Length: 126
Image 1 (cartoon, rainbow, N blue to C red):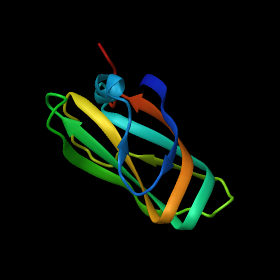
Image 2: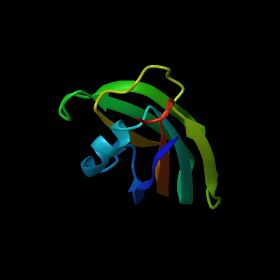
Image 3: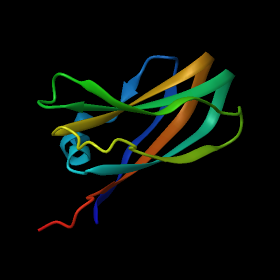
Image 4: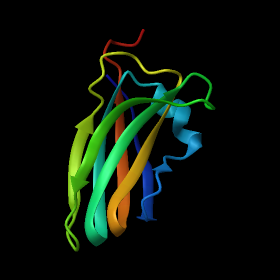
């Protein structure tokens, strides 16, 4: 059963420092048992740009633990659109708060990254 469908990130990212989905969405993302994540990269620039996407979870919104790596250094082509759908492969429920971390790799990478998430319950809600 679908709980939500949200655009959670839409920014031009430069460099190799990890950036995160907004904290105002942490509780929303944590409400789902499974996440289906649609990722799109446009205006891709740099030398050998890559994209890594991680899922983090937290019991209190302050201390974060890595739950899964959803994409690991996926190659993106300069001047092309990168698009994929990934899902949370972990069978364990998340903690109360969830955020996604986006990291570009390569030399002087840049891209407009859009992330849309569909949150689902594995079991019908009462």
